[in-house]
Image 1 (cartoon, helix red, strand yellow):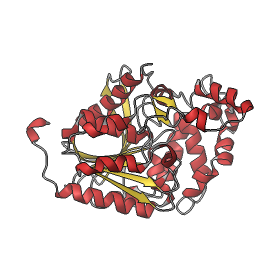
Image 2: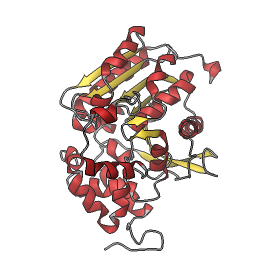
Image 3: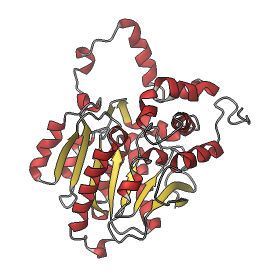
Image 4: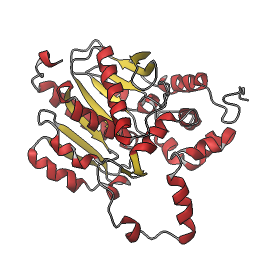
Length: 347
């Protein structure tokens, strides 16, 4: 039975519950980790803090930083952290506005929101005293990571985009070519005005059950590691039933759920060639329908960008085939270790 307060009587959520569920999921890790709040100052709010997991920080190799996607949090990397941290420092962060990080109110301008999120990662890097890093972003996190690489290329040894959101431009004839039943059109129109995960909060105390029932596909991805699948559904519920400022930031940046107002495809070609980019897609991901890899492969003619497909994986490639994902990421990281470091004077 949950304990209600004036702020969570309907959704039955609290940061204490979120902390407990995160610890329960991360208890399956074999590698010791440390969690801490990193004060990044006035990025969006008055004193923003980013929740951070730190693993194998004594390793001399280039550190890997993980940035999750919409509606996720650090605990969902549970099947990746042991493997990725075997030979290098790994840091996983809750994006500002998500998970256990601060939830400030973002701008209503999509480009300003993007810059706010990028600034939060740069201030986090400064506070962590990381000279260079390998930055990996999944989905929405990939969009943020790509934007960061455009602003701070000298901070990165390698950029890894895992099934990234926000790359292509929305086709001009999409509405005409896709047949939507007439009675569904007003529902879609209203949904565009709301944050994407509003049903979780609308369901109130039944939100966790809603996640468990309708996103059983995500819960089952962790069944080989997590004994009690409800830990995953409850964790996702706790991440998203609280003040959804990060989700609101995503809503500001999106044109429709599948596309960004300022798509990255028009900008990624301007990325500094000293930053190698590895893009990983799941062969069954819904993003392939909106983001053909052939478009990015054309940029690969410049030799700084590599596109790889993980067969049989969907959008959540880090969990669908964790072994293949970990192997590809580790290969990219080892390549980064062999690169010459950037000029330290630019730091």
